[in-house]
Length: 134
Image (cartoon, rainbow, N blue to C red; front, side, top):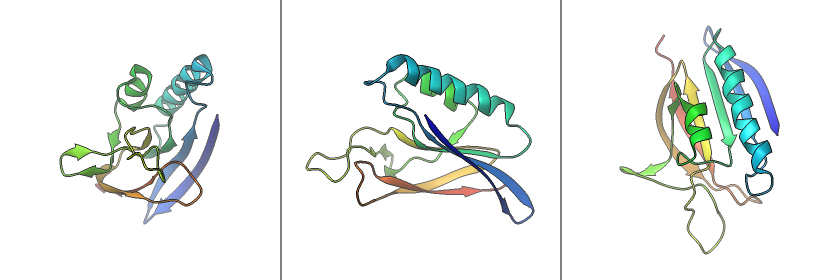
């Protein structure tokens, strides 16, 4: 699993941002499930500032491990009106149908997001609008 971690400051507020990318469950289901649980446990300890988890979780809301991890987080998910859209596969003849890329925020309000074409990848990116209530 790769996890990129940074702390950014917006105005006077610090925000912890983590990039998430576990191995796909098709390659190593046990490692994938362990990674989601590790991120869930780690995020439970990160309470000193707002937290954003973003990336290719290789999971959709249909998977219990992802739902457990996302508990307590607002999700900024791309949609066409009330219908959610997928982020994978991208740049193919098949429309993106799996929403396995996510922006999760705790301590921030999640607003509208839009998909972004990213050259050289088989995923759409997500541009998410997050807001502080302070």
